[in-house]
Length: 344
Image (tube, rainbow, N blue to C red; front, top):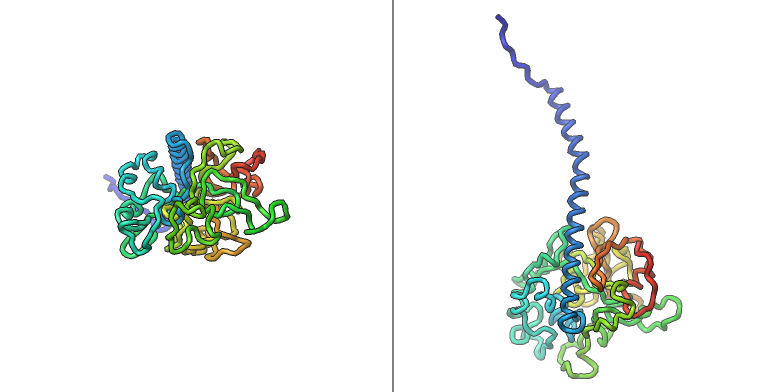
């Protein structure tokens, strides 16, 4: 009669098994990460599609595209507010008051609230999934006891700067190095003092012929380059710490320009807002504008190789970081008459 015996793993065998498991994990992890990022990129593209369709529905209802910022710029609401009913957020839209308004008394942020005052804070502290790319980590801008949400999609302010004039400021179009403003589907700080937006302390009435014209809604007929050739929206990375990039409730964080390429190593110019320059994620910036580099912000994403972008006809495409800068600027202009043949 034989005794039954049990044979356990030796230490060497156990170490071999652990090593094999570690190798398999090492091989599988990049594949899992690629699948996860592909899914995030697709979800991000779908978000832009929803934003594009919402813009088109808004245009169909009102006869013009969304205002990029309120008519007095800065702080009384951006395109995020009027688009809310078109992305199934009508309840938030009904809460928001004083869109495009003007603080007659800047300290009175309850009766005439800006984005961060009174009932409006209920809206601007809400994170909206449609406006958030899953590849990014949700960030907030903290002010007092409030945490205002940042998001990932910005509208096209054109090919030059947020003032929508030539870059550098005052240069002569046609001369070397001068990039003329060639129209945009969304108006930003046009008719400002080329430094801020409204004149501090924001006491000029909207009826004043020299003020109150920022954020003018653009009619579809003004997009003479064609809606399929003109950018509507692209991505932004939510600024870390209290960096206001991606803070799309505020005028300076709600748009992008194509003066610099997607995910450019050239800096954004965050005049009027907090700027935190980072290399990971790639977010170079300077906090004060110059005549050579006025207020502007580029399209940025955490996707490898480029950014998702929506066109004014509702289509969505992926644009490479290596796109020719002249093609990128041509895609951003609405009245330039350029021929856009390749976005790679």
